[in-house]
Length: 309
Image (cartoon, rainbow, N blue to C red; front, side, top):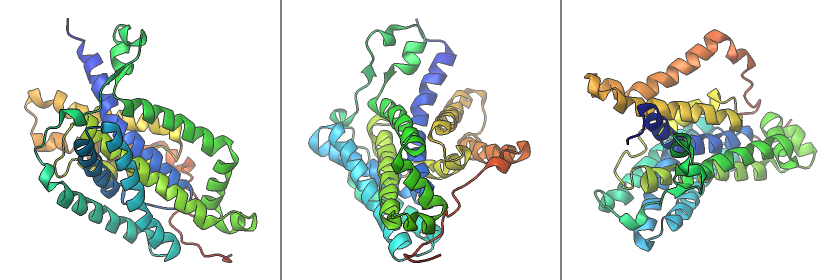
């Protein structure tokens, strides 16, 4: 007996929202430290192609996952070097990183277009007993490891940022780097680390697309998800727990494209749904007055040099 349509939609929405959640968590960490990284799309693309190439070469999707995280972190350090060491404009640097990552991934991935590698697919995990529960078991407990990692990472990052000394340092660097430096905190060190964490999670998000969601590589695989991640970071108010709601909500919007196809709606219009929804969420948030409570990190996007006041 087939599952009800609601169960199928929710199941696919969680799968589609997983890379958005991973990318948003990474961007939250980076922006909490004061680094605005608009290069998420490029880092996701590099992670996707690196993960797939490695998984095909080794026959291990886990090796592909590790390679994707490392590649995303490595690429993000280019932005960190430009923004922190060279004190370049973070918006310009991030946009350049996005274009570089997309172009580089397209070049590296050309030999892998159309390659189907069964050994490179991340196997679905069925949680014992819980996966047998009617409906809820299919929705929550029959998922690829990326989903469970995203949930765990979201909770861990929320705890670290809100309840640990490390989190206080990250938030203080993002709010007032000069005061943090007076307290003995290495502003550059914290920002480099947070930017690398953001890049690693963006790379993991890309790996989910190539190793679990589609199990293939093609140019444009990320489909603009990196730009949605940046909007979701604002929607989440830089809170990892709130990122769950935004990511899976937009995962549902992605799935809605396919649900509405039989109604004869033009495909181009359906493809624009996630981006229209992104704008609507931000506009409606402003109408409701949520933006009055939107407190972005005070020093977000601002460069800092030792000894500055």
